[in-house]
Amino acid sequence: MKVLKIYIKSSIILLITLCTSVGFSQVDRVTSPNSRVSQQVYDGSTSQDIFKGVALLIGNDAYSSPNKLKTPVHDVNLIRQSLIDLGYTVIISKNDDRSTMIRFMNDFINKSKKADLTFFYYAGHTVQANEKNYLVPIEAKLLDETLIPDESIDLDWFIQSLDTTKQNVISIDGCFPKRFPFYVSVDIKKSCFAIPKKVPSKTFISFTSLQYELLSTTSRRNSSFSHTFSKELKTGRNIYDVFYNTKASIKRETRGRQDITTFGNASYIRWKDGKFSKITAMQGSFPWPPPKASTTVTPEILTPLFKDFNTLGGVNSHLISALRNLDYSDKSYFSISDGTTNHGFAIATKLEQINEDRSSKKSEEGRWDERLLNDTKFSFGGYISSLFFPRKGYFRVIVFVITDINYVQSDATVGRDQAISWVQTGHQELDSKIATKSSQNYRVSALIYEYKLSENDVRAKLNKSSGYTGPDHLKKSQIWRELTQHK
Image (tube, rainbow, N blue to C red):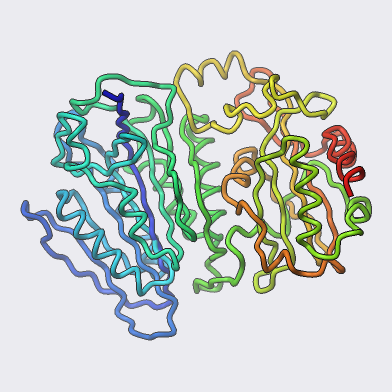
């Protein structure tokens, strides 16, 4: 019998459709056989011109001992208020049974078809079985692993039921001790969620991950995620920044024991001047202007290497060929936008470990060691060893920028976690509409984000000044050689 992993998560699935109107009314109704009260908050406006948003928040904490939780209902209430303040239509379910949860989820799926953006939040226990995630209703006993599909709710079913023509945002928050009867062991080396095998288009999924029994409770009424996320919602930042800032805050607060892993894409949507505005841009826009890099290869140096190519597709093919020859097989595409118009694209490479002279390590020396990326796969033993036996060294992410506009880097600092997320959240291929554009007015540059993990330190830090020039990095990595030899 396959060992199944249960993870008691304060999970959050958020599906948002944004709305600019105010004047909400709250309707209470009895929704379960046990007369538990769930709430729906509806937008009273019927204007067809309003950008509509809908959210479903589910909080389960009234499990039988020893699986009872403390924060999920408080988490739902906190995020609910933040969403209402921003103009969302909010549907809430608290401590409902399985059939009622499914009814709420189906109701939400139907309402989301008339929305522009959806946000679904679940806080409570989840189980991971057969490489799938399940939401656990409060009455579930889970005496046997074969009962999981019948007593719990398949998260994949819900995700695949959403309208993929709309923007969907999904978040899973926190793991807690595993004490259901069918679970017999704790594997502290495994991730507390099943990685989604297929993320639908225009869907953004985050998992707040925690291992073993660490941080199973909090001194607050709320989880670390909901506490920070509810504040970030009010800042007016775009979806990516809200999640990345929440991620950074959680990692600082928990000393790396808790983290957020993201999958998929989100449209560039932000709060501005008291209204939500959806900016026309390809999914996965690169932060613009780009965050401050450790060092740069200027357009004057790099663009001449692409002079023989007449389209952006040709520029891309030349660059990708050079990267592929050097084993930079994992990369991610982002559009470059000023908010209304596309101005090219960026390619981010996977985090690699490099030598002190900035040459690439060999693969057998750990250049692409997956453990460099899987900082969410935390274990107590791993954390303790990281304090005393850190994987010290230098690391690098290279971002190639191909654009027709001049730019000055912003003062924003990119942490290692955000740099890692670039290769996980962008597109796998260049948009065909961009590829056919003439390259005549476009210039190529490279941003090198270099990180150093010092001995007896827990977190790798950005080197604000590398000590090596951008061309040094391209030459040490052999990318310069490939670009000049393979025209």
